[in-house]
Amino acid sequence: MKKVLFISAILAGAVSSSAQDIQFHYDFGKLLYGRGGNITEYRPRMTTTVEMFRPDKWGSTFFFVDMNYGSKTGDGGVLGAYWEISRNLRFWDIPVSVHVEYNGGLDIQGPGSGTGAYDDAWLAGPDWQLASRDMSRTFSLAVMYKAIPRNMKNPHNFQVTATWNVNFWQGRFLFSGFADFWMENRPWQVTAHSGADGTDFIFLAEPQLWYNFNTLEGLQDFNLSIGTEVEISSNFVQSGFFVIPTIALKWTF
Image (cartoon, rainbow, N blue to C red; front, side, top):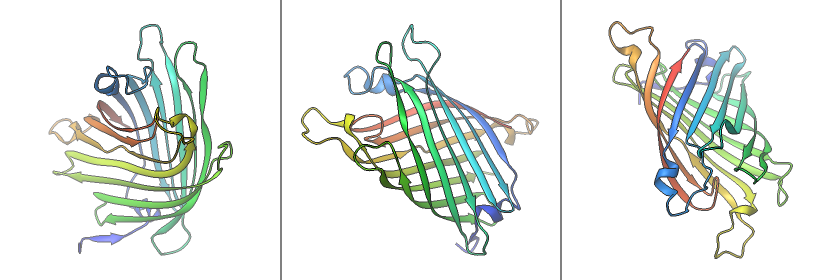
């Protein structure tokens, strides 16, 4: 551990550059769970993600946008979109930032079923960062108040978010991802044998593993990566626990 020091994302910005990428994910959820009716009929087969991280002397800005595409013949086009944008601010020397964030989106469940919106959510709280001296390994933990104004049961909630990035084997591989645990009542998640009004607690983690082609000799400017993401969730898009992998491509700008 002697090579590891506590450092904020703001300080990291002094030694690391901005990053933007676009990802293409083929989702195996329908294949793994669809036959038994254990997962929504309209789970997308394809998702594209655009994300950006940009540090500056006052902190850092991060956002991503997910676009979900139809999984049935005749669906066509984008069936859902979701985005998050966050800002970390720090004006002191300790490795804790003030984190503020917004989440929201729209989801079309299928032909004739109408549309549904992800409830707008506003988050704020402390964000603690850990990084190695060469920035090849980073970790952050945010503990936040989460306001969901349109939640009918309780607009006042919380969320704990962990994120990580680990480069290894001379940068050939990147292990990254996040894990969220939060409180949000979702009445539609009632199971067939439950008399309750849904769940109040949701877990979602999406670890990713990438192989970077630009580490190969002669391909230094070829910023394509191939990899996988595994969505591990409990009571996220519906009641129950699911483990859903993808196969993915990523281009980093």
